[in-house]
Each structure stands twice: as C-alpha cells, then as structure tokens.
Length: 212
Image (tube, rainbow, N blue to C red; front, top):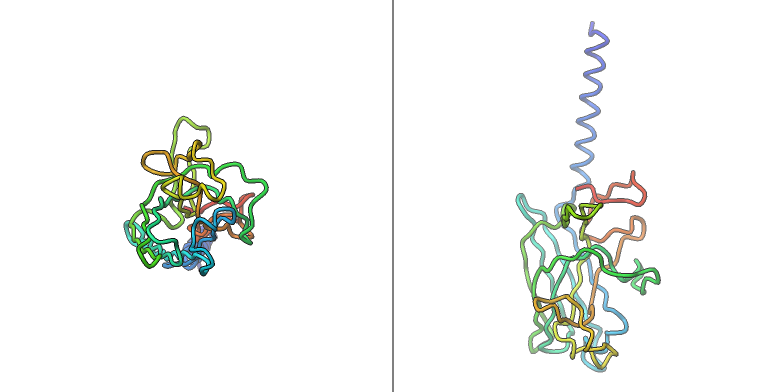
C-alpha cells in the first residue's frame, strides 16, 4: 500500500504534468490576422475610388524564433512604410478608434515595407514574436513591455499630408525618426485587450497579461 507521503507526491506530479499538457495545448504553432486601416488616413493609403487596402499577417512559431509574413494589397503604388510591433493599438476590437488611446507605448522597429507598381507588398521577418516579444528597460518601474500589436507607418510624412497630417510634426516611426502617421494596425482581442501576437494569455491577472 502506498504511504500518504508518496500518494501526495504522486498526485502532485500528475497535476503538474496535466498543467504542462494544458499549457502546451494552448500554445498554437501558427496564427493569422488582418490589420485595419486607420480611418482618417485611409484616403492617402489606397487608390482613389479603388478597393480598400488590406494587410494580412501570418506568424509561424519556431524553435529559436518565429517567422512573420505580411502581405499588403490595394495600396497606392510605390508608397513606403515602416513596420513596428507596439504595446498598444489605437483601435478597439471592432476596428473603431479607441477614445481612451494616448500613445502606442513601447515599440520595436521590425522592417521596411514598399508597395510595388501593382500596389502590393510581401515581407518576411524572423524574430521573437509569439507570446514572448517584449522590451526591457531597467530604469523604468515596470521592466517588461510586451509588444503584441503589429502596425505600419507612412515613411514619408508628405504622403499623408492630404489626409490632414501636419508634416512639421513627424512621428518617430522610421529610421530617421521623421515618419508620417500610422497607416494600418492590428486590433486587440475583445476579451483580453491584448494584441494578436499573444496567443496564450494569462487570464488569472486583471487585466490579462502575456504568459511568456
């Protein structure tokens, strides 16, 4: 007959194994999502009277890093953009502007994008993305900042001037820190409020946080 101590250890081991199995099951190997155009800049993003610009993102989990592919279509030909992962989206889950939005928070410069003559682009990057992407600053009280949202900005401020963007006040979202406004961005999950790069959120915290 098993002693009480051994029984407790056995139950604990089974419970631990079950928790690890659930965690592994929740970790998806691939995710896809669309970016949403920023409404006030939409006219500067696409061709007049043309179809609505689109951008689709596919992320595949890897052993050492992940692979993200972004494909855009119906973009005004030859426009250039700068893609970032950011802490916060300026949009709500339904794609409308977030009235409480103040800034994008922590941001990582990930890639340049360039629409061709047909108004399309396709770019692939490899880096840490799903669930574990974060920035670190030991000088700040909160040291880890997950950047679970994906967006891209007009590289040239003048490209968005017709949509009301003040070219004398560029944003820092390119290599020269003189970019235009956001063109398209991901939307947060309606339940957790986290961006789509978080596939396994920790819902035991309020608000939910990344599990990585």
